[in-house]
Each structure stands twice: as C-alpha cells, then as structure tokens.
Image (cartoon, rainbow over the protein chains, first blue to last red):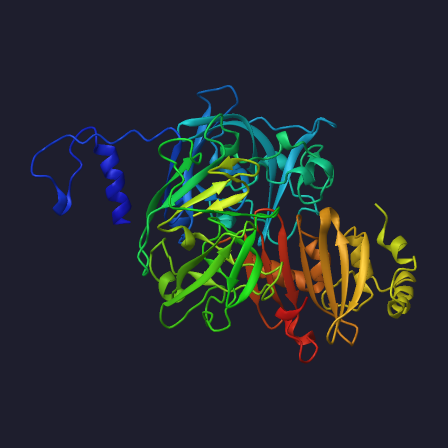
Length: 414
Length: 161
C-alpha cells in the first residue's frame, strides 16, 4: 500500500510543494507541477477493492479498478462518481450497482420501443448472474464523455426479482457478491450481445417488464444501438481501441499497483502502437494458446479474470482453495499465443503458491494461477490469460471492425 | 422454430436410438434432469433447451447426443453403456439453461459458485459429486461437467469430444 499512498500524496500536493521524498529528494526546492492527465486517459489502480469489502475482511486480488462518473442525461450537475469499478477487457458495457448511487441521482430507465415497457437486462456469468434495469447516463471517462449511454444498473429496486430464465447460478447483484461497485467492459466488441440480441429474443439477456420483474418480464429483441455498450468504442475520437498499461510487479506480490487506460490506438502521441503485434480473434473473442503441445482454441486475454486459469496435471492444487495452484516453489512456465492471423508469440509466466500469496494483504499477485477442467485441446479448450498477463505490458484492445496499424479488429496486441 | 420432438419423429435418427425415443415420447418420468439421469432425458432436454436438432454418435465406450440450441449453440450429453448421462458439455454465444442441463447436480454448482470469489469469467469446481468448469470468453460460454461416480471405466473426461 505504501507505494500507492506515496503516488497519491504526490499528485495531491504537487501544486503546493515539491514532490520529493526519500533518498531521491532534490537538494533544492523547486516546484514540480504534476502533468495534467491527457484527456484520453484514465488512471487504474489494483488494490483490495471497495471500502465495504475491505472493512468486511473480504478484499479482492488482481482486480484493476477505475472511477467512472455517470450523470443524468443532459445534466452536468446531477452526477455520481463511482469508485472501484472493475476494468474488464473480457466483456463489453458499463454495469454499476444501484446501491452505489445517492438517492438524488436517478437515471432514467430505458424502454422497449415495441411495448413501451421498462427494459431490463440479465447478465449471466460463469459463476452466477446479475439483474437490473437498463438506464441512460452521460458517462465521463477521464476527460471524455459519452452522452446517453445505455448502462446496466444492477440490483435497482424497480427491477424486482429476476425472471426464471435469467437465474443461472447464484445471484451476484450486490457489491458483496460481485466484488466491485460495477464493471467497465472495454472488450473487443461494441455491444454486450450484438446482432444475436437484435435479431432474436434470447432468454437470459434482455427483457421488457411490466411493473417489477419476475413473471412480468418477457424476452425481447433490442437494437444494437440500445444495447449496453462499451463506451470507449462510442467516443467521438480515439475510439478504435485502447491501451491498458500496468506497471510490472515483483514475483512475490505487492500491496497495490497503478496503471493507465489510454483511449485510441495510434491516434495520439500517447497511444502509438510500438514494439507490439496484433493477434486477431474469432467471433467469440478467442484465440489459440498452445500449451504442453496442445492447441487450446477457446483461449482469451481478460483483465477481468484475477488469475491465469489453465490445466496442467503436473501442478498441484491448493488444499484449502482448490481453485488455485500451490506449487512448493514458484514455477517458470511458457506458452504460445497465436492469433487467427497466424501471428504468434511465446509468453513466459510464473505460477506461485497461492496459499502463500493469499496469506498476505497484497492485492497484486503476478504468480496467481488456477486450474480449469475444460477439454485438453480443441475448440472448447480455454487458457484464460487473466490479470497476471497484464503486469509490465502494454496490452492493446482493437475493437471489432476498427483499424489500427494495418490490422482490423477484433484483435489483441502486445 | 420446429420442436425437437417433431424433428425426432422423422427418419433421420439412427435406428439404435429409436426404442428409447418411443419410451420418451410415451410418458417418461417427470424428472427433467440430464446429468446423472437416464438417456431419455436427453430428448426432454432438447425441448427444454429449445433444441432444433439431435444427432447421436457412437464414441469410444459411450454415446454422444448433440443438441443444437439457440444462436448456433451446442449441447452434448454423454451416455454410458448403462444408459446414464455421465457428462455434459456446452458451447455457444449464449448460455444454456443450466438448471435443465445439470439436473440434480445444479444445486451443487450453485453452492460452490456462491462461495467463489474472484473472476466472473471462469469457474471450476472439483468434488466427488461434481466436476465442472465454465469459461466465458468475451462473447459466449464454454462449459463441461461430469459426475465422477458415473464415468464408464477407462473414460478420461477431458478427452471427451
């Protein structure tokens, strides 16, 4: 935590005094003015998460967070800034917990044009679901704004209970069960569902509801422009993708880390595409990982996963948390990532003892990894490159149909 | 969308499967369970999942029943020589109804997922009662589950295709 506190103190005091300190302090007093953050950037912090979770003894690990400001459309003053929104390159769209809003900030609920009923959404995850209304908000991302963005407001009182066809696993519609005050999905796709939900009424996605939720809800189609969407792709400029940059982290872990999300790829002097290549993705956002000689075609690179998840029978799982690996010593390993365009790269990573990592108060764990039991190879085999992949890298997310450096998305660059 | 039953009544199905279809369509037990249930449940699952096609393929020591579901998704149910669904797998742009697909194992998934903290995009559990893994790439789902006690002898669940 020390490192983060120092950094914040520097920013806060920069206009008043020299920002020195420690052995590197200059001998003379000179005023160092902190540079104004570029309009196309947002700061990222990897820490223990929302205050409520930390106070309850339920800190999170390896989760990058940003702060997002949402305003009632057309209003510059009726706004709410929500901290600890998870930054997720593995999904698309902004979802925020209704409980994070002050009572005076009421975002208008969207309606289904065909029935004029309230539009609500079910977000299904691998480990549960979240339910709530679709609302409109003017969303501020760093120095940029997206007007009237469709946003998923999770757990709002108006939405009532989730319909049966939404319920899949446990309900994660609270800060405690979700582990964040929201999620900012800045993945490769513009909408969370896309054409599938524009052409078909798919259970488990969008619903029109007559008073509350439950049986009053019917699955409906939603035009792509009304779907919950990745706001970075809807910016007026710098909208072909983004760069996510996290500082490198020591193998043994550390309290917290900082980074930057920069909008656009090759559109400004601060987002040039250098020392990197693009690896193109399929319609599901997946590429190939070759590990242990086997090609896993359902692999993905995802800042929303807090560990590297892959199968390796030679690694022992932890006794008290079988969702992670616990080798007796940190293991250096490598795998090959290959895009649909045939571009490939060997990627080194480490697997550390998760019991030891999780016994600390650290929120940054480059060696955190866990097993999956998907097939050993083939289209359904997945190597999930979670946040450990991002430490010490510039990771470029090129949106679907957008172009940068001669490549067309969806693609990931590093 | 044509119902699965109407498709099943046509002649495209393999002859070996016909007898169990008859038993299914003529009042099978009320249970809709798939994983851990008898073969007949595959067809009920097809209807419950709004399936549009069913193909049956003989595998090494098991039979694979594949149901095509909404938006190009796919559900596979693996049936042992004893006629029990011992494993299921799914993939596609939207998740299938896990209550139907996991049957009596669904509650074990919910309980384990409730205690799960961390990634929402991947979930794995491995207990004596249920081994399950779900991955959620940017668009879609891939999942697999089996009941260890029901595995036919010599079957490697991770080699199921």
